[in-house]
Image (tube, rainbow, N blue to C red; front, side, top):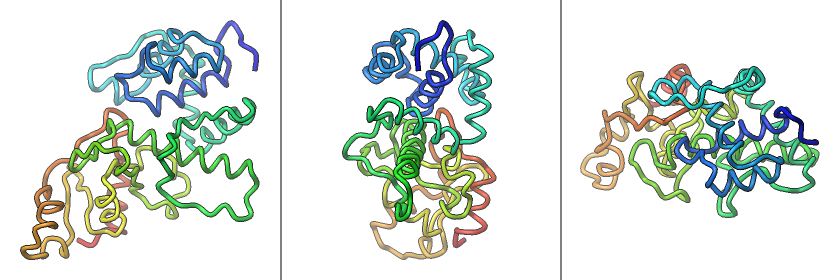
Length: 258
């Protein structure tokens, strides 16, 4: 994939991947991850950081906070943004293709201690399919966690090893949105389990709802501290990829025990 005067499709895919997986405040040329990827794709760290802020200018959620990014987004930037943010599976597939081109250089940005939040059976899959699933899961996890600045949106817990990128609509229920970060919440492990089991949910106005079982748990101090003390409080919203209201409604109507 030789470098061209303009940005190649592969270079733009890598830039979009980094934009999804990186908090807005870390999109600068001194970031070691930007330095590493810039070397990989044959661009300077400054050019790659600038490309990320150009992509930020296309993100309506970033603009809604008053941060506009840079105004130099090209038509190619707009095209790749529209194409990939409307088809997250395709983005994962493109990343897998680029990873294989670079002959084993990992583009997953996955620390050794991390693992995918949703176990998937690889039986019968080709190696290419396995790579694509792994990259897709990791893209979802890092996009969700970084959007919430690696903090549980209910409690504020900031221990990354105890955080989960929780699917709002369950993995098996909506294949088309499995990798959509708007179908994710950053939750502590115990709140992720409670959400998955329908013991908690998020209201239309983004407040924590408890099931009757948790509300009626008597004087259990652990449940009181872990769940009841947060009931009715707004979750902390992410800087990008805010949870889709339709996904939250699906969870309340199909998973939650009100």
